[in-house]
Length: 248
Ligand SMILES: [Zn+2]
Image 1 (cartoon, rainbow, N blue to C red):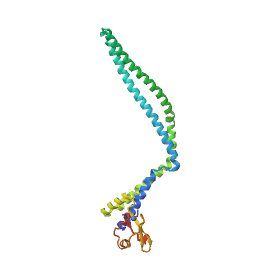
Image 2: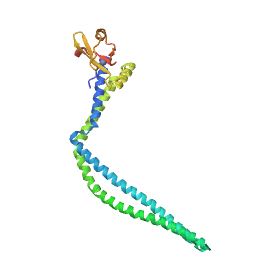
Image 3: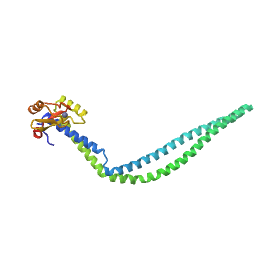
Image 4: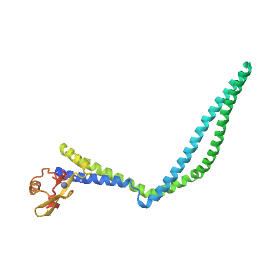
């Protein structure tokens, strides 16, 4: 790594900005599936989604079936409890109430049994739907992985490079005045990462901010030329960077 401890704070800030911008754009590129792979990605995500939906459907039906089974077991116990009371029935009226109770419970059981039958039919078709998806999935996954292989490697490379650029920026920050860094970060946040802007010459004595293109007052330009003190653009408030090599 080329270390330049001699860089003045503004040179450093400019370099830091370049590194951070590189890190951002590489991190962003890493999240964007290339055009030629988008149909591969979409087709695979579709298979994944259909497989999850089929599994969820089966799970839901099975869970409902378990609830119904439990309810039926309870209702059967209730039938037995009702039947045990039969010996105590004395009047016609009591007998009528006994039959009603029995009938009600048995109807509740039948309703649940009917629902279980419907669930079993639904489960059968859900399994029929899920089976080919399950069978083909390993092959789908393998083909997807193969087609995405190069892109995955590219993503890893982009991540590595973005991390390296961020690390280099952090190293350059060491030793820069805290207040300057705070100001830099604040402007960067407001100005989409562009906190420091080169001064470009529009004529022999005319300079402009390269970010907002507003002309600098001659006094500002001479301030910039004479000292390496920090001057900000009067229009966009960015820190102005006068690089004698490229701005002269
Ligand atoms: Zn400006």
